[in-house]
Image (tube, one colour):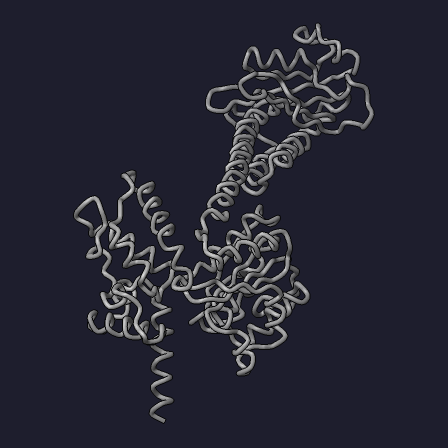
Length: 499
């Protein structure tokens, strides 16, 4: 039953349900508008249908959808009655008739006469109190559905149609915003954000420029904190896949089953807890770039599945029997020597060669000390922009100490050190005391090896933090997983010596 007391037909009731579903299920603007008109025309068996919208602030009328029009038909046939449309827009009220030829309201409509139209229904589309257009339907022979309930139905239908149109416009705005976001991401992760004037960094930039627009796999090697993911993002957002997704997955310290589900997805019921189907990251990254961090740590089972993706572009969800195609550029990274892992039998040789089509080694910060001053200034500038304050100065002795320090956590540790110093500094300038880096390392290089100095600094800090690894990692400015990795490495070496 509608507001005027007329009972809606089953077709009309279904039409109201259908448009509600369409609003939530069709994201593209034009297909959504076409669906709106399909539903309306089918509900009252109209021969022709038009959706006419006002074009923005200009109020120019634009026909967005025309139904049941024969290609090549005369111009008068593929347009609604202008007099009907204008009358509805001007009076902001619906118009309905089953005797269009003799209706005095339409006596001036030449198209009604020429096309021998007998039934017309036209209702305004009202959104937030403003008329944004009309839905127009007519017929030359079928007047049965143009009954007393038709007008009330179309008014209710038009209310939902207006929401559908608003939804389409919002989606269009989001798409524009998304494109702007991609542009901003491209700017953010462009080469200017990767700081370095040293010879080794210039070699990295040169290689990046050469591989931007190719689809070959890239292997990034280097210590933790050297900026491997930043390079991967820059390659993606400056390349031809920039309009699609960039996804990153850390592969270390994850169980095989969890990582397999994350990468490839799973079918409902494939294991305990799989209560629904799940898309894997490879599916989500289709047409984009997938960054696999710490690739050396994946199991032989995952290695085999990854090899199939690289060779054939095919994978299966966990528990599924259906192959799925995917087009993804893979950039992988490791802080281990992957060639040595192959020789040890820990990593498949065929997968190694698939991943290592192009390899780039990110230099540790201690091997590009000339970049430290410009990196420090960059971090200070970024902090100032974020906080809205002036750029903090750094005293010459403090900058000298930063340049001499060995940076076991590389650029990430340097960033954390500067951010911490900005908070701790009492004056407008950062001093050596604000840096909180081990004095022995700030005084200059010693005859000991870098690994020995690194180990001494880490273990001393761990002792000062009373064995708290999380606090130790924070003080050093390194990741907790890097700290675990180093402690495990040193413990393994100690065990070997004892044996």
